[in-house]
Image (cartoon, rainbow, N blue to C red; front, side, top):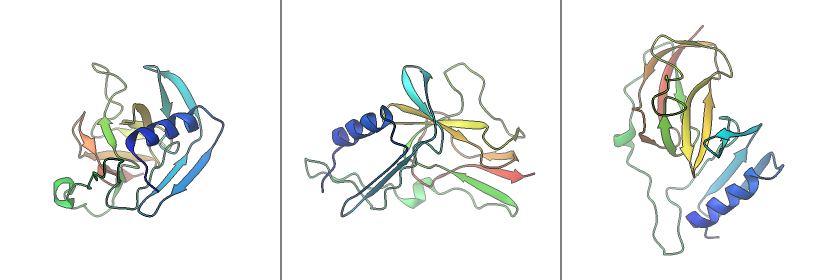
Length: 166
């Protein structure tokens, strides 16, 4: 099965506008999983989804497009985070997208170094396929490191922040 970017965009749009809570699609060289909890359409006209709402996992090294061009994953060296200190928990990206620290340009960031966060508190936004996905803390913790610059593209599994659990 071949799935190009336009097909993927249309598929995500259809699922976003439906009542479907979980969706899985597997091809020979990829697996796409979408799980969601709630939708809020008050963010710049785009659907705003929680981190659990869109959980894409692409298990292949590339996605083939109709033009037989592949999009290889970036080298591990270019996205490698500094080694973790003991006792810290990595917060990783659940999808490929663009990392934003605030809800809009000029707004205060969701978190800063030293910010204490609670489970479910928004810590950043990842933009993927023109959808703004709120990433929520899975821990009661303190932000110890922020490893990604605002507006930077991120890969699935890339370390975004490190926290110290409280």
